[in-house]
Amino acid sequence: MDAALFAKSLLLGLAIAAPLGPIGALCINRTLERGILAGLAGGLGTALADGVYASLAAIGFAAFSDALARIDMPLRLLGGAFMLWLGVREMRPAPPRAPAPVRPRDLLGTTASTFLLTITNPMTILAFAALFAGLGLAATSSNADAALVVAGVFTGSMLWWCCLSGGVALARHRLPPAFARWVARLSGAILIAFGLAALLTALA
Image (cartoon, rainbow, N blue to C red; front, side):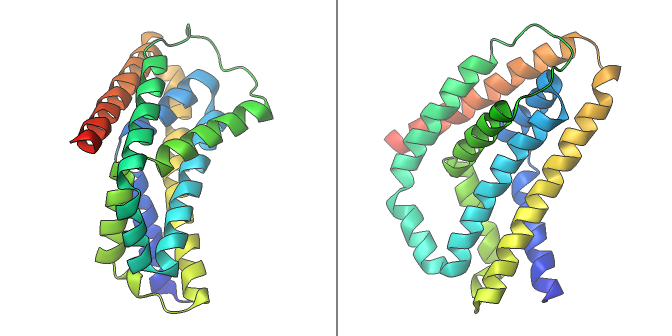
């Protein structure tokens, strides 16, 4: 196994996941409202989307960049509309309560929604393409290298979401009751801002 290639890919996964944007705010809110499993389910959706992008880029970076250019506007419109819808919903948080047992169907829905949000988020797409090229990962030459890149990106992304969800879950009981409500509102505001930005840039 090429340890250097895996380390670069893991670093890419961490770098893409770590900035606290709309997905990070959602992960924190889900953990506060429904517990660590809900936060991890959201993180899994994001990590899977990052893995999809890594797969496409590792197969052929030039084709990947060209494909992104072709579908840029539809993705911006879809992602912007989805972020606006989620943002409005997040601005109306549920009353604070202890996390209830989460059903597998709920976890699947959380994973699916964050996967869709990540896969259609223009900022994630642009950051991924820039960092992928900057780290020299576009030069992967074999199927084994491509698989290693995908595994590294997924691992790095999931590692961040485990740390974030775990940290929030541990600190939850030390936070004031109103904290979850304000996080939900902040999460909604961030989603609305990103959604509007995506729609305006697409229409411009």
